[in-house]
Image (tube, rainbow over all chains, first blue to last red; front, side, top):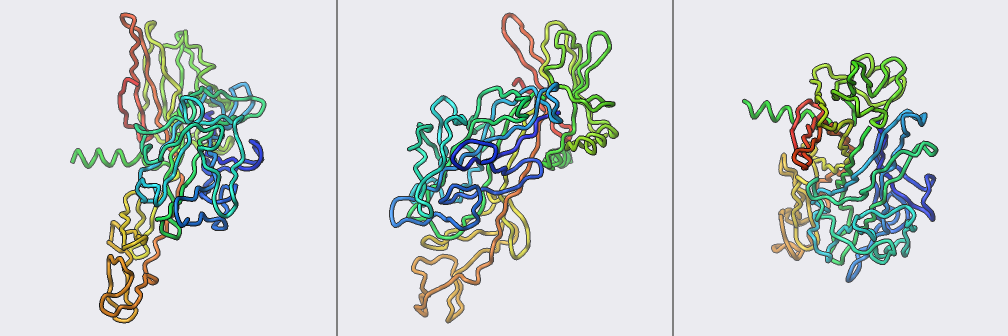
Length: 208
Length: 224
């Protein structure tokens, strides 16, 4: 059978299944929230304060695909040959803030390769000053640059998170993709309140 | 009329509930075949199990009703039978290599805005956000035009846009406290495009022909 694929967020000190929160997939629906703590969805407990000048970054989000399945001989219900070409885009209406850092932007980081994703082995826990601001995405060792998400808005203008052919692991019966790291910057010109939800799309090829 | 029919057809594949509507079958040169799911044991096979050297035909087929029911009930798989869907096949001769069992999958957390007046639900990217002055913004419903206004608590005058937040007549502070409350939320949508085709080498160049098959049965022919 085809793989079961979920979008997930990693939090905590180490990359592990127990530290993972599923955001969407079969029967799962949780909206992640940019915030100033290391959690997928801490309600409105840790908002990002509007600074007097400059900007406050949120804690960095680490999102990836969690792919459940085995080979046909692996004994699982869901079987697949490989998953490949994992891509991502937003919808070009990011908070309707425009693209100036004065009010706010959402940035995605690029890994230290020709692709955007960061391998699980390079994961580090999101840090910062809880309740105030997070560490800058570009200060992470695994990140060598960043872009405004407004550059990625449909399948013809998307970024590649993971270029590999990801094959099943019959022992674990699941595999991880590389992760996309992103964060929100709130600028001094931002208006207060909840700016609402945003649309993110993950795309992947699968040979079943 | 043709345009209306075409639009309707395209809309159908936007159900986006994550259902799988096609399964593949590989047909061999000796008349046997390997289906993605064994209809008796429900065992599933992968493209790695296909003997590509012996394939003479490969296709995507709508799930038979009984098989879909069993896969749903016994394997908890999101399979849907639609007897109105056509089947798609390619014949593979010795010069061609099959491109089969391939899907492109989409999983989207899509953002919506609900109007408190007319209750219409619209994609957030289609809802205009209007500056009311300074750092204050309001959404405007694309269906009924509902939006927030500044209101003077003394003379009840309404203002669409004002920079100083004060009524020019009464000089009192304006507020937008009774503004309509737009609800925003996300909904997960999942869908897939089934791909089928072949590649062949002609004059030392590789050529691909691939059908992109949507789950309402319409198809687009591409070279990648």
